[in-house]
Image (cartoon, rainbow, N blue to C red; front, side):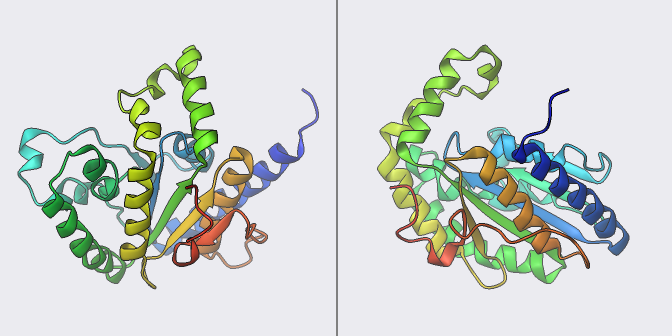
Length: 248
């Protein structure tokens, strides 16, 4: 085996801290919910893989729901997500979440404007209920530049190992870039709150993004004596101060 590079060394150290923090969270009975959102190709799958690689399989779940069934479309919007929320001692990661209704659904016409407005009105109250019940809610928006997204979309089409990443909506990601930008900006403005903040991660450099995502999660778990280091302020920033720093 060759010598580990700086990224691998740092990743391993952070994953060791993540394992220790999860063991502590299980002992404390913490309920941890991590929501990962972002444009297509922003690196959600890769980040989740590194977060969960050495996690406890019994206390860790990744939720990536398919499009709603006919029955689910007739339910209260948040109903299909509630059964997947964490119990005491669990970490749940949502690979896309109820925030579909703040992004892809209104942009692609999968919901009505009225449903979009209702969601933006309801979601702060829904998330406040979660945090009031003791859930540690970590909301991450993975941001990417337009040029980098175009590059990654092109790579998907030619890489046989990325077959399951290819989506019929991929072509829309660039064609509707401005509409997604407008939806993102409104979502961050209206659903960022003191108790349920958004944290934005710049992901043009995937490896740097992954390291900083794990650091941020470790800071939020706040295990005593955890050795984490500071997040990079050029990569990680508060959703309330994201204007002017996001991919246009």
